[in-house]
Image 1 (cartoon, helix red, strand yellow):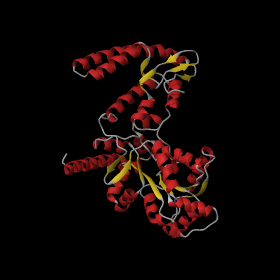
Image 2 (cartoon, one colour):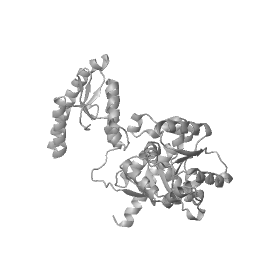
Image 3 (cartoon, one colour):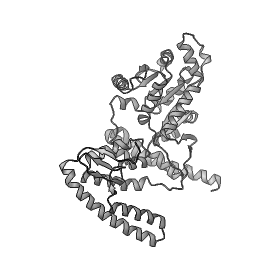
Image 4 (cartoon, one colour):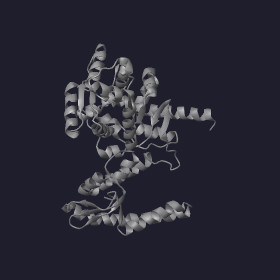
Length: 411
């Protein structure tokens, strides 16, 4: 279906049917205000912005768009219509670089719209306008450098394609295929796995204080950006973030890619009961994905060699590690030379989310860049220092680092 084709929605409730004429009346008032604003902008010399506002005002007056609404027109089962909005759930998700299904967001809006929801959507749109607006002239590079760590700045399909290419071309992939055929290979014939990791504001604060962790990040094959802190850091540096690529959102795409290639996966981390629940959920949601083995995160340092041998014997092509930062990266650093797998992904709290120990923030909080606040409210004793102190410290460090680089370059 074309992305601009009307969507279908169930018959509106009685309260929604009463609210629709009031919503239309409000849109007429906003059309007048937009027209007045366009006149002011034209007199101030901002002709392009004035032209856009006049066009939107005309469409709103005709009922073809509304101030808030779905990202495309929705047709109700009783024949009524809900016009697309200027402020939409899909647009807010895009502003915060989130990978969310626009069609699903539109259906949810059509099922739940009302005065309270519309007011909330309007306020979130105003909030995003303050924190997520970016200069159109800002650079949109495929990589960026923060404190000597090269971070990838691509969208999800590009990242999955890159990860797939890494596994296919890695020398250990051939080794795993030979091993599965019954032939043994010496440890010396295997090389270190490729490493994919994620960084947010807290990760960089830790990396700047812990040299071993910082060096692992710098040597990683693929470092992916996660969180509003990275987005704001890029704004300070004069660049833009394409997508927020946290492990929880990326894992389903990784799992589908692994299943498509028939590459087994090994899961490492979390508490035993949580890990078991996570394995069951993965089996339900990705029935064709082979999980070669699993191990909870409560093992002793002296058990690491035996664990690496067990991972190697499992025939896994990738290990997903969810033991928290920086423990998971330091584990990889100590054991990379022992591992025969082509790929290791360190994905933080992924297994705790899959095992339902922790809950994701509601969509509206993620759209507003407030997932950190949800985590803070969940675990105030553990998270207050990370977010209340750590985020401002990170942005201060980014500002100082960016300023020093500009001074060195003479700009």
